[in-house]
Each structure stands twice: as structure tokens, then as C-alpha cells.
Length: 150
Length: 150
Image (cartoon, rainbow over all chains, first blue to last red):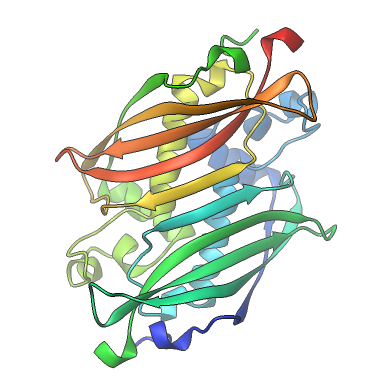
């Protein structure tokens, strides 16, 4: 049985997800496959871009944050996926070597009207870099089975 | 010189991005690294999940769509990254072997007030599966340099 069901999340709850560092090899590897814009894959081109150096694809940042969410609670939860994301803000470039400290706040918990026995939680994710700058925010939904239905 | 600058996008424009197929090996590979929930990485567990079979991580779907956007126009554009995403809706599971037909519509073009010589375009992305079902929608921003500034 998973540890976390829908009922285990409550508005205002803060879940620290820990830290993740994106190095240039990982940035280039991800972007070569999924987002090969020059400032994500080519150190030299990136240096002469408006960013002044290599930066991670925003989708790479989302992916590594998803992994932190999995490791912190989703893999031990009754998660049944996500209907979507309310917004993502890539506020500061994530540069090679940056370390992001990530946390989740529960903004809303909504029992399903159409499917009793499950509900959705709205989470606000924040990722702060080692300079104390907010690098990314996201509001995203997660659907979970309810313990009452298990 | 890139082919596409800010001025080259106009509201109502439709950009077909082509198709992408997600097979089970690719689904499992991506999810093993970034989103190892059982219904993304384990065929057997997925079969007995509410999804009834392996489905792609929503972040994987975003990543392969980003690649289509790159190949269709971003790599030959004056793109200077993205400030964010207005929303993502994962409407139908993307199952192993599904083929998505993806297109972009330009919803808005907004010259920068603070930085003359650049602007942002708001795009609506739709991904329709081989059954004609809308699998995913997204509204996302892209910043571009203006030709007038080049």
C-alpha cells in the first residue's frame, strides 16, 4: 500500500524536495535530444548569445524537478497521473553548474465530483538557485486515489 | 542570419509541426530518468493501473513536441528562449505506439516594452493522436529578436 493518498495532502502544507544540480554535460545531453537551440547545446554559441553562456532547456528543468517530486512522495503515493499544469514561469536562466533548491506548497485539494474515490491536488513548485534567485515557478495538478477508496 | 524573426509571426498563423510516435522503449527510457511512476516504466504494473497499459510521462510528450517546434522553425529563428507556459492540458494518455500530429497556432504577438528589438509570441500547441483524439494542448511563450534590430 502506498504511504500517501489524496487525504494526506492539505492546503498550506510545504514539502521540501531537496536540491538538484544541472551540469553542462547533462544540459547538452538533454537538449541535444529535445531542445537543440544553440544556447542549450553549444558552449561557444551560448557564450555569444544574450544569455552569455550555456543554459538548460526549461523542459530539462521541469524534468529534473519531476524526478525530485517522484523521489520525495509520488513514488510512494496513490498517484494516478496529472491532468495538467496551470502555469510555468522560467524566471532566470538555469546555468551549467547551478544548484536548485526545490519545494512544493499545496495550494488546493479538490475531491473529484465525477469519480468518487479520487481527488486532485494543486501544487506550487518553486526552484531557487544558489544565489537565492527564484529560477522557476510552476503550478501543477496531481490526481490521487483516496484512502477511503483503497 | 536566421530565417524567422519576431515580425515573421502573425496572429492566426498555423504551423504544422508534423508527427511523432512514442514507442514503449522511449517511454520507459525517459521516465526511468525523470518520472519513474510505475505506469510510465513498468508494462506489467501499468496494465493493472487505471490506465490499463504503459503511458508516456507528460513531460516526455512536452519534450518531443519541443523537438518538433525546434525542427519546424525555432532552430532557424532568432529565438531567445521562453519566459514560460500559460497552461498544459494532458487530456488523453499517450500510449506506447501512439502517433501524435502536432500543430502550433499563433495566438498573440507582443513587442517588448522594456526591450526594444524583441518581442514574444504566444503559441497554442495541439497534439492529436491517431484516433483523432486531442491528447495534449499547451499555450506557451517564445521570445524572439526583431528583424528591425538585427
